[in-house]
Image (cartoon, rainbow, N blue to C red; front, top):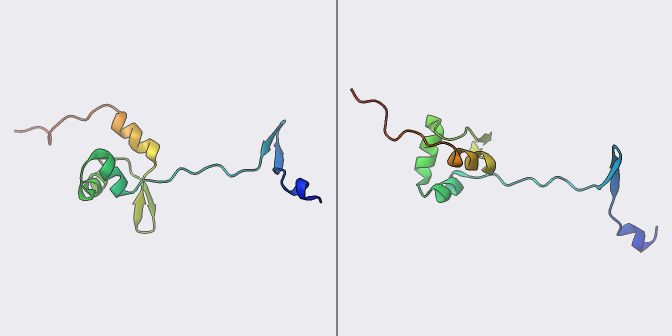
Length: 89
């Protein structure tokens, strides 16, 4: 094998298309601190929202919780929730 052959990209055939053998990029997950910065609230508030089910469930990795950016963006851009703590008697 010549040096120029080693520098060529590896391709694999999928169906009728040839595509470079690259791993799909994985989008980094958001932490509670990341969401706090985006929403301009404290990390404690984000954790409380998580416990109350106010934000998407997220992914538990060991003891840590992480969220997909697209799920948080969809939640924030979705229809607004009613303001307040419910009906008063």
